[in-house]
Picture 1 (cartoon, rainbow, N blue to C red):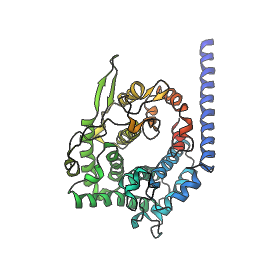
Picture 2: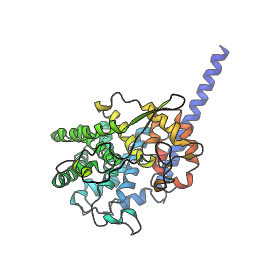
Picture 3: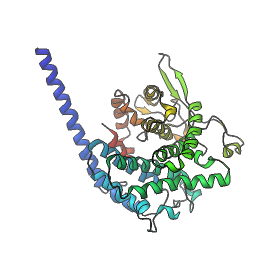
Picture 4: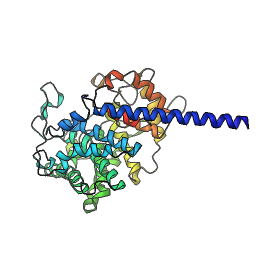
Length: 366
């Protein structure tokens, strides 16, 4: 009986410690969101009216962070915060900042790699944003929140996909633009399509066709490897395995490129969402193999690898720390990842602080 009593006391202590740690993280998150940080609420409210499509990336991370916090705490203030940011873009359709007026264009400094798209709408940036708009709509619908705003949010989500689909079919006769040249870009739009399959019955077949074509390529891309200790893990290329659409067929030298960890996030997130949203194509997918990729190839010693196969690459050097968008969410599938992730990220705290990913990092911890 003494052992049982000691066990109960220890369990209670651990439960209290976990609860206290979670409360501390919630308090820290709230303080960071309200502080005048580079990507706090004040900055995001300004970005939501900027009409600069480059801001969609940071806005997407911010919305996801609050989605995570609502799911964790059920505190409606996180929903309200997202509504305040989304309103000028999707809800106030008569505003000059409304997304459906096609006025959101790239506006970055000449030294930014995206400067070539200045003055133009930008499919890649929009994908970062709308995958999390789909997630937000799903949360609202499931929890019966802001029913009056849901139609406008769904309309904006549908408009984003339909706009690029129409332009793609006009130019190529297929979904080339939405697939893009890299799996991780296609993955973001596949997440959008999954949510639209759930909420827009009128065009479900179109979304399903896009998702099924993407899934066929992703299944081919994922390579199952075996370590020296016979542990199975996945690696893949960021390039598509086949030149299956018109845009890819027009590229003369479409050579394989190993997936970098940072953008690999989007592929991992897609697989998580595919499971969550009941995509039958992935019903038997084994997430433990992805978790093993993190353990064996990415979280190495005191550093985080550049590529998913553990290699380095000058073009993406020191970007592996940006794992909040997908990889880090694998801690929900394998709790043993938690201390590994926390240990490695502590080495990159200076990069994370004041980055567009900071709130997202802080929202994912259990």
